[in-house]
Image 1 (cartoon, rainbow, N blue to C red):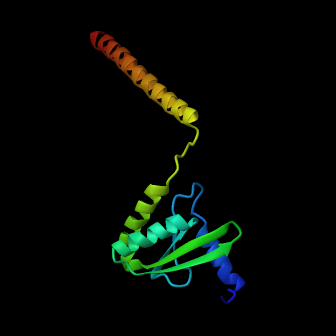
Image 2: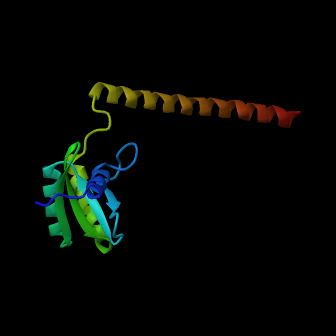
Image 3: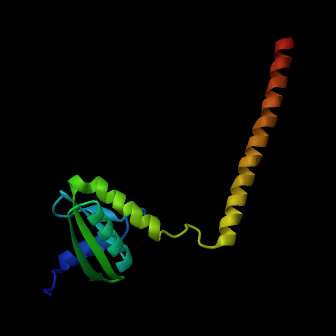
Length: 143
């Protein structure tokens, strides 16, 4: 296999990372041809499932793999006209291989409990203040 130019490797490196602070998306517009969208996956299992999903939807694609600092990335090039179908396939892959945002079960339950408690306190405070507001309104009307 021929060696890629350093500039090409930088493009692949940028494409292999997820976009944003939380890594919410794994696709980008092709850096040199905006008619294509590039999807990137970090594991062969995700890439194989993406290939199956694209074939199932009869979407034309190009597949490539490249070595970067963090390991191997698997890239799929899809025509922009097929982007909606490719996104559906990408959602199916993400759904199968997703991880919980908070991996520690005890911490996750504690956070849900804390959130529910704060919402409950907010509702109780709102109801109590509505009663006080009605009392003040009645006092002002009687004067």
